Length: 172
Image 1: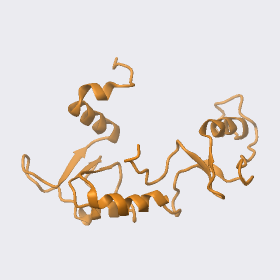
Image 2 (image 1 turned 45 degrees about the vertical axis):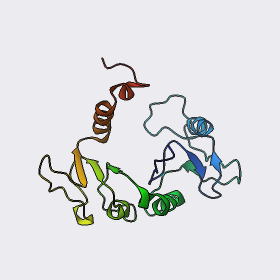
Image 3 (image 1 turned 60 degrees about the vertical axis):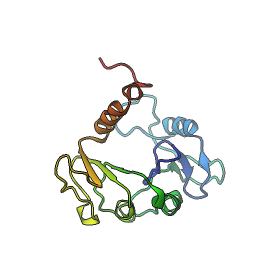
């Protein structure tokens, strides 16, 4: 986990946008169920009106998952890891992106190591990613076409068949 940088944040962590204090994810989920209206009408126990969820630290109503929305700054960890880790990378895996939004796309452009692009279509040619190698020819850039989850599962199975099935129920 320490080698993965969630460039656009995570739905799995919660913090206050006002003061930056982290919030307990389980408590946040319970608060959402208890305080936020179900706009689809699927949950009969949901309240009929939403009420704000205050930050336990500062009391402001700014608690949300730590996702980065359009126009917001990327997490400080992105820039820290970019400077510290990029020069020593052995391999860069880029998955599920158009590589058109800066500064996140600069990672692929600046990396001097082999790059694996996992996506439904080739991307990043304007950043210097080159998919022109003939089959069997060594290339710095490799394109693996398909859904990220499917391609990553196939990679795991090819690298270590037992690793791909850990923690998952057997296929039916």
